[in-house]
Length: 97
Image 1 (tube, one colour):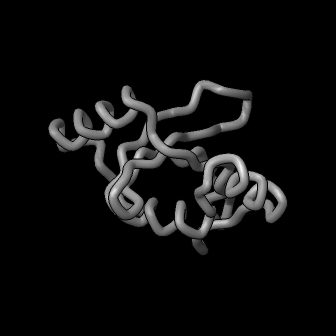
Image 2 (cartoon, rainbow, N blue to C red):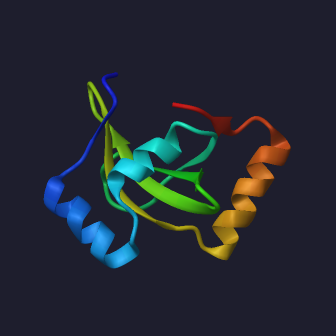
């Protein structure tokens, strides 16, 4: 896997809407993440809850043959923050890319 990729216009729209750039999201994903399947759409999507500086974010992504394609990134909601803490307590779901 070569790293991360994203659609440039989608990345700009994400910054405008959520204030989080995909470059920052990719860096956050290299740290400890709790990963779940995303139930939206027919594409094979995943949701990583990970730390970006002093806050938790959620990054939606899909695996591609040579990279991870970032779809969106936003601040974690309350239930997602709890899911992250639960995943770390269980110890089996934390993952680094």
